[in-house]
Amino acid sequence: MAKETIALLGTGTMGTGMAHNLLAAGFGLRVWNRTRDRAEPLAERGAAVASTPAEAAEGAGILLTMLADGEAVEAAVAGPSGGLSGLGDGALWVQSSTVGMDDTDRLGALAAERRVAFVDAPVLGTKQPAEQGQLVVLASGPEEARERCQPLFDAIGSRTIWVGEAGRGTRLKLVTNTWITGLLGALGSTIALARALDVDPEQFLGAIEGGPLGPAYARLKGDMMKAGDYPTSFSVTLAAKDVRLARQAAAKAGLDLPLLGVIAGQFAAAADLGLGDADMAAIYEATRRGA
Ligand SMILES: NC(=O)c1ccc[n+]([C@@H]2O[C@H](COP(=O)([O-])OP(=O)(O)OC[C@H]3O[C@@H](n4cnc5c(N)ncnc54)[C@H](OP(=O)(O)O)[C@@H]3O)[C@@H](O)[C@H]2O)c1
Image (cartoon, rainbow, N blue to C red; front, side):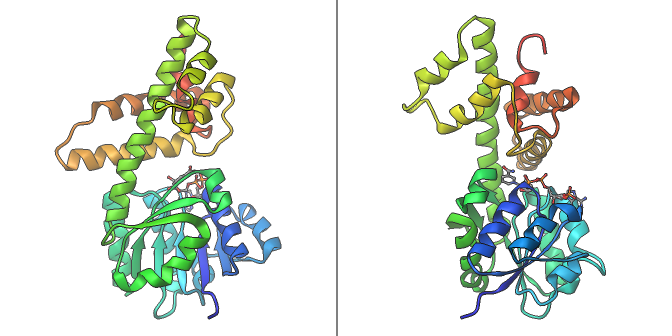
């Protein structure tokens, strides 16, 4: 059976990695990005680069969005030049940007207005897993859409976890992000304390490595903090957005999570230091003595 044509809106860090794997898996690919230059290199690999989201969506079986936040997704899919208006009958929409619970509901309603099936499928993993097709897809949506989405998910990820109706994937993503940002905040404070006490951070990383206390994540982000060099896999700005989304979801559920308040403050301080586009590991710069 011929593979679907995918319309991908958003060729940032994650979208670009996903695009390469979709092309390698033999999907037809039409792409749109607000800053066209960032999408152009994909033309050399066989993607069609469109001038509007609607043009990208024309003739596509699946619309895939991988944009910064809910506002960006809405701007790209709604209106006469938006992705939804370019889709034909029977197409479906896979929404993989991290947008939180309220925006997921709102975007799902937009899809319903256009009678487009909506699959809420945020992903775990960062730049390198996206490039290697090793993301974990937290998929949720109508039963009928699952079989059709699976080849796409198999191309971009190593694992798909189906968790129920649309919105459940986003909930699991917020929970997982809380774990990740908590680890990162703890790591920033730990390395700051090590340096303040004249303990080599490498001694700490080496001491926890390979045991239950030492996730690979500590080495990955700890090496960036040690070097003070933050090549971006996931930016401070987007990580701060994710903390905000988790806090909003917690508040709505009647839960106060003070740890996330502290981490939000540290991300804001890192952004004030001009590090908004740097990797989230730059939270360390807001924590270390003298920052
Ligand atoms: N990076 C990660 O580790 C990671 C992991 C899991 C999930 N995510 C989530 O995946 C999504 C994309 O992340 P990323 O790291 O790929 O981000 P990124 O590299 O910053 O790319 C953001 C994308 O959104 C577009 N965009 C931003 N504002 C827009 C607007 N108002 N209208 C239209 N397009 C807009 C950008 O277009 P321009 O090129 O024109 O700026 C770009 O295509 C985010 O929701 C993020 O939270 C990221």
